[in-house]
Amino acid sequence: MTKKATILDHIGNTPLLKLNHVTDNLGVDIFVKCEFTNPGGSIKDRMALCMIEEAEKRGDLKP
Image 1 (cartoon, helix red, strand yellow):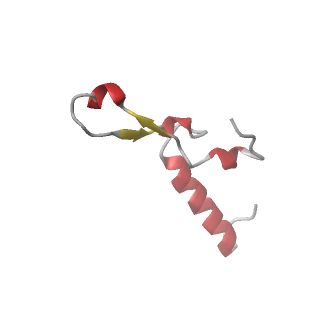
Image 2: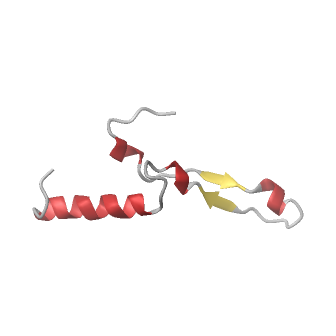
């Protein structure tokens, strides 16, 4: 586990999990993203962070 400066640093870069038992007899690898590891437990965390950062860059929001 890596240390992060703020909770915002935990958003994105979600881990991938290989579904071994599902694909044993298929000859393929299937991976799923573990979005539940985001601070809010949602895929929307990355989108919301991007919207806020862009609004700050434009001056619409102050940090």
